Every structure is written in C-alpha cells, then in structure tokens.
Image (cartoon, rainbow, N blue to C red; front, side):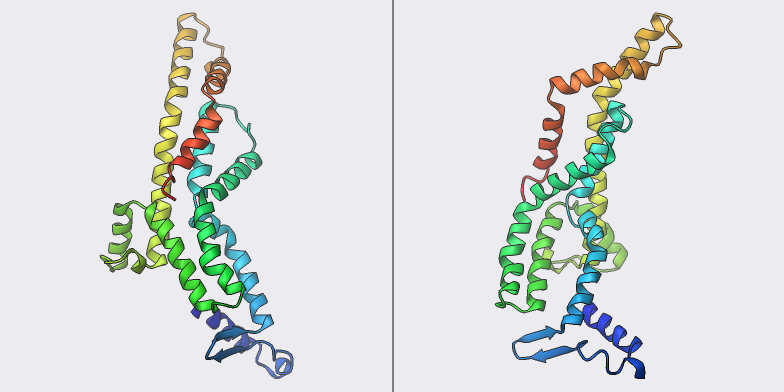
Length: 246
C-alpha cells in the first residue's frame, strides 16, 4: 500500500492550506496492532484510482490480449471487413477471458478478497496474497526467454523463486510473450485462407478474368470452409486450451 500512502500524502499536501484545514479531517490513515485502516475519503480515492487503471489491468494481466489479437487476425483472414463488428469481437474476447481466468479469479477471491471483506485479513496481507496468485498465472504463461530478457534489462535476477519476480519485470515480459503467441496462432489460422485466395486467383487468371476481384470470389469459399469445420468453436476452444494449465 505504499503507493496509496504516497497518494494520500500528496493529496494532503496539496490541500493543506488554511481554506481546507477544516474540510479534510477524514483523509487519514490509522495504524493499529490489527493492521492499517483508511478513512472513507481515502477509500473513495483508492477506488477511483483503481477504476482508471482497470482497463490496463485487464489488458496486461489477463488472457485478453492474446484472444483479441487472434480474433482480429481471423477476421482479416476471412476478408469479411467489419463482420463481425469490433463490439462483438471485444465482447467475445472479454467473456472468453473471464472463462479462462475463472480458476485464478476464484482462487483470488477465496484466499484474498473474501477474507479481506470479512475483516479476517488486513489490506496489505490481502494485496500480497492476491499478487502472489496473479504471479502464478503470469509466470505460467510467460516465455522464459522474455522473462530473462527483461530481467537482464532491469539489471536483476536470476530469481530463485518465481514469487520474487517483481511486477515491473513480469508484466512487460508477459505482454511480450502474449503478443508472440498470438501472432503464431494467427499465422496458423491465416494459412488455409491464404491457400484458398491463391487458388482462386490462379483460376481467375487462367480464365482471363482479370477484372474480377479474387477476394470477392474466394469469400464464399472461405466462409463455407469455416462453417464446415465449425471454425468459431474450434478457434475459441483452441484459445482456451492454450491456458489449459490454469
């Protein structure tokens, strides 16, 4: 909670003039033997701060990045322009992310969030437990080469225990690993549709139909192939299976 304390201190310093001296008695941090308690104003400040970084957390600490990139490449390979639309792809990626992350989120709730809400665990130990749980997921899905690269760039490591890896090193390594994996999956998805485009283009050229777009002719065949192999279920199931250990 060091960042939260620093935020509270900065806010208090900025608003510590005479005009605000009587207006901020609730912006306090109370230390006791049972832990650290924060006033209602400080809790609201922490909540608003958390809401601003929530999109970054969803992108950087979950399976969302890999899923949305693969779905976008798949749409481009099909050549369907904006079908399905971006809203549908994002919704599908979010729901699939929740499905993939459900075991990790369930453990996070049971071991960190629920004890904190029930008053059985203070804020700082709860955050430490939650961070350790998220590190297990991130490290399990991060390539060792990427983790070593960012450890060398930070001038730290090697680490004896995965739990010792700081988030400042783990998060960029995880994002880099996710991007690499997503493009590898996208390449494999692109190949069969590329073959169809090449075959259709060769046939049209042999027939002398230079003015007819190969993309327009190949689109029905690509859609037919995708439907016959149950492409959406295959793609979504394969993406979820890449996180099968979680």
